[in-house]
Picture 1 (tube, rainbow, N blue to C red):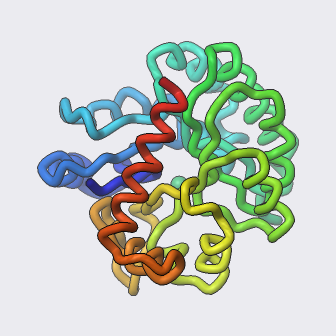
Picture 2 (picture 1 turned 90 degrees about the horizontal axis):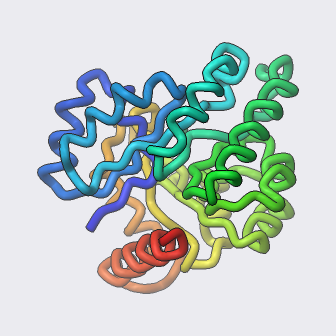
Length: 243
Ligand code: MN
């Protein structure tokens, strides 16, 4: 079973075609959204497959444009079992929206907490410390998607009990490979963050998560078949935490 724990299915040029292929291949896809208003359209991509799940999100890069959609977020939350993409982005180009990003993220976490917690796919570029601070005392199951923080931040995130989703693209960088090597093997799930990621210069699709197996096989020093079993077991463990 292949698992893509963070994919923007709705942002492919031909989303239905890709979703159909995922359905046929039986791939588990957490189909994340960047705005609450994308919820309805993106849900249609589930195509009745029990393996394609839509996550309700509000991407930090859109916090300034879409903070007015928080009301809609709260309205949709009862029907959303998964949350993402949410988080904070500390990139210099987004400095002007930082305070608003914090406001939006806090609002979301408060709502999630009140609703009894959710699996959350979290963006933490240049902001892992701040994200972790916000997560304290919040009921939920954070998955740091494409973690890129410092060693100290990584240690904190691991000690916090977080999950991590890693992609072929992340693993093909030295930093991403090193970060992944430092994460406990029972806390790792695969993802693509497609369609905006490339692997070996080619745009990625959910089924490309299999490229992670080669890299993880090197890191964990076990055959790829065992890597697949480990990832599947991790995924089951994550879902059972929330059951
Ligand atoms: Mn993403």
